[in-house]
Image (cartoon, rainbow over all chains, first blue to last red):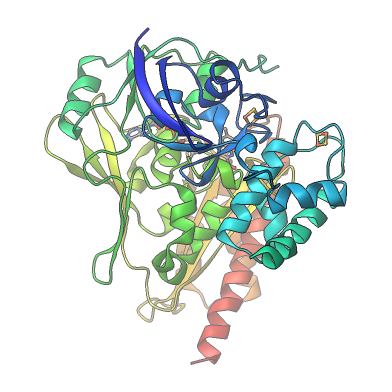
Length: 159
Length: 303
Ligand SMILES: Cc1cc2nc3c(=O)[nH]c(=O)nc-3n(C[C@H](O)[C@H](O)[C@H](O)COP(=O)(O)OP(=O)(O)OC[C@H]3O[C@@H](n4cnc5c(N)ncnc54)[C@H](O)[C@@H]3O)c2cc1C
Ligand code: FES
Ligand code: FES
C-alpha cells in the first residue's frame, strides 16, 4: 500500500507525518498524535463522536482520509480552550450539566462550536438541527441543548 | 445482519491526479480496480462493510473547476461535482431559485456529513433512496461528464440503470450537475418518510415541483419523482400526464396519487414492507401535491 508524506496543522501546531492511504483522520489523531479526545463510536459517519473541525467546518473524522488533509487545518476538542480559558461551549456544557459519561461530549462541543461560528445566536430548531449527527446515550439531550443556548449568551458577554 | 463496521479501511492506494485527463486515463486503464471518489461517504462505508475492495481510490476533488458553484440567469445553475451539500444549501442563488434542491440536501444525514457529501456522489451512487436525486430529476438536471473521449452532457432521467448502476463507463468522471432555471412561479416540496424525523434514509420519498403552464389543458405542469420504491429513482409519468390534462381539484390530485402508487414497484426490506410503501406513495404524493398546489394558488393570489 502507498504511503504519503503530509503536513497539517492540528490545534495550531504543525505536524509532519507519514500516513498509509487507508488511515483515517480519526486514527491519525488518536493513534499517531495521541489526541484521544476525538472518540471512535461507530466508524461509519453515524454517531458524531469523532467530529472535528477541518478548515473550520465540522466533519466526521472517521469518514476522512488522513492523506486528504495535507495542508489542512484541524481543530479537535483539545484545541477549543485558549490561554487557559475554556471555550464558551465548554464552560456552558459544564455549567448546564450536559455531560454524563462524556463519550459524546467532544463531538457535541465541536458541533456546537461550528454552529456558533456560523450563527452566534441560534434558535432552538437550529440547535437541534446542528446536533442531528451527534448521538448521546446518556443525557436525553435536553441539558446539551440548554448548554448551547447558554454558550451563545456567554460568548456574547465575553465579546 | 450487517457485518460489524471496522475502524480500519481495507488497503488501497490513494491517487490524486493533477488533471481530469490524467484521472480519466487512470480510471480507464484500471476499470475493475480503480474508483473515483468525492466525499467518500458512500464508498468508505461500502469498503468497511466489505462490499467493495478497490485497489485504487482516485480523488476527483480539486480538479479543473469542479469546486465551483455558478448561477447564470439564462443558463441556470452549475454545481461542480466537488461542491458539498452545505455549500449548496448556503448558496443565496440556490435559496432563491432552487429552494427545492436546498430542502432535499437538508434532509441528508447530518451537518457534519454534508460537509463531505456531494450531490454528484449522491447521483453517481445511484441508490433509489438518494435524497437529492428527485429534486435533480424534476428540475431537469443534466450531468457534465469527462471521459476518455470528448466531454459530454447526459440527461439525468436516462442516467440510472439499476441500484448502484448508471450509464457511466470506466474513465467517466462527473464534473458538474447542471440545472436549468426553473419555470417562473414554480413551487416544490420534498416529503421524506424515514424511521425517524431526521437523518435516516427514506422508506419512501416524494418530490413534487409544480409550475404554471398556460399551454396545458390544466394550466399547470407537475413533476413527480419517487424514491425508495423502485430499482431506480422513478418519475411518475402517468400521474404527471393526468395532472396536465384535467383541471386541478382534490379529486384529480387523489387520482394522480393513485397512479403514482401504481407505477411504484417497491420491495420489502428492513425499513418497510412493499405493501406499506405502496400505500405511503399514494398518501405522500397526495400530500405533496396538495402542498404544492396550495403554494401555487397563494402565489397566484399574491400577484
Ligand atoms: C451516516 C450516513 C448517513 C447518510 N444519510 C444519507 C441520507 O440521509 N440520504 C442520502 O441520500 N444519502 C445518505 N448517505 C449516503 C451518502 O452520504 C450520499 O449518497 C452522498 O451524497 C454521497 O456523496 P459523496 O461525495 O460522499 O460520494 P462518494 O462516496 O465519494 O461516491 C459515491 C459513488 O459515486 C462514485 N463517484 C463519486 N464521484 C464520482 C464522479 N465525479 N464521477 C463518477 N463517479 C463518481 C463513487 O465511485 C461511488 O460509487 C449517508 C451516508 C452515511 C455514511
Ligand atoms: S466514529 Fe465517526 S461518526 Fe461515529
Ligand atoms: S454523555 Fe454519555 S453519550 Fe452523551
